[in-house]
Length: 415
Image 1: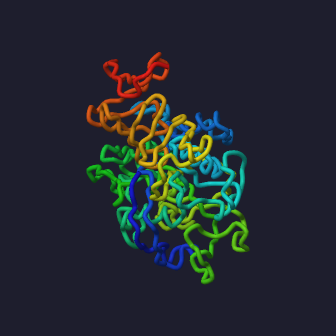
Image 2: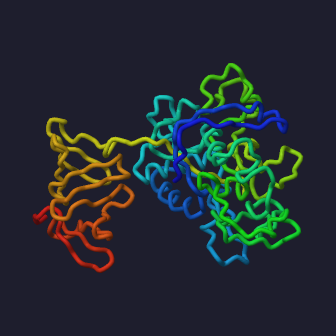
Image 3: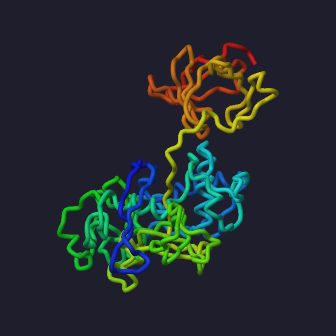
């Protein structure tokens, strides 16, 4: 992910479409956003796990449109995920959070007790934990700030004129016309094949088209779902208070109950009458239950550091200091933060949540692990991965995954 620093930017554009007016100043706290659009490989890595852990997704998400038949430089999995509706994207963000050991953002109730995993529910702004360390869709404000890459009042991330060497759009001259390109394709190795279509793009040596913040494909390829409901008058409403999350679903301003998507896609041309949808300020809209080949998403998350092993359960009474964590097992935590684990013995643990855990072993120093890697540990000093041997007759053994050697750094005791 890429960190977008806190600060203000100008959002919208004057003189093209009324729903983009007025140009207005927006302040945002710092956040992180994916450098690339979510790929097909990303999607199935998480969704396969999610389906086994209580999640459901629409049937269309099982058959995204991948690479064209003639392209063999990468697989389907390198192309942006598509044919996901808004509900799919929201649930996938939650699933990724749980998979990675982060707190989730989306709930089915305002008390934030029930994690959103199934069905198609029109969530309210109050059902989102905006400070959660987990993943979510960007708000319109977050998306536009990140996509602009620090440029002010420009049509595109590179300036005011469309260029076929810089983005995948309809008749842009790239070899993927009427289809998506691999995520991050415009990295200085892009090829322009139709010189008469690329608006002089073929006359320029290809350059890396990451925007000023290092993001790829914010314009073209696939348009990207955002959190917000659409209100064509939202920017100009004088009585709006918290603008960050957009209008309320229950508000009279939301007429057709459509969600926002941003950036335009490979089906959009630069000269369409309906507002030139490849512009940074253009507000695409779609019903949240619809899935399109030309709409995907990328994730953001708040810069929140969580308490170590947030969500662990007290085993017995707190006075006994025993806890249970669903991926780590039972452990005893002393008052000075040393812990005793049946396999690891006495170790010192620090870090954030269940996603960034550094554990100090007296016999070998620091090792890193997390919910999504355990029982694998990384030894920074040795630059090697180790697998905790949980089926041996003796505790505490680690297998070096490359050379197969065994080291005993944990508890010296027989099972």
